[in-house]
Length: 79
Image 1 (cartoon, one colour):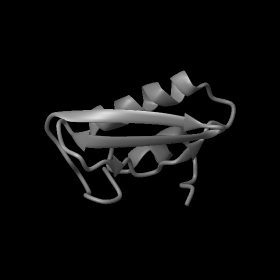
Image 2: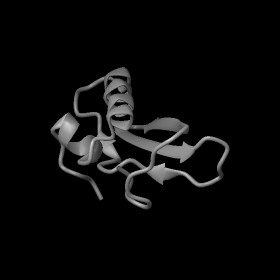
Image 3: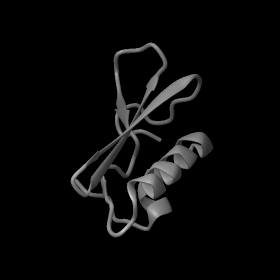
């Protein structure tokens, strides 16, 4: 689930960016210009490693979690 486009499916490219303690997960249709934020991002690392958040983010994208990343990590959505 994305904030901008809702559910997107198909051949997707994912980008996971960590800046300080914030993690942003975005997806795009492969070859497209537009990027969409995964619902629930950015999230705070909050004691997790970047690798842990990356793994959960990729699982969320693959599973098409309707709640996005925030519920999977047990985090409140950050605005």
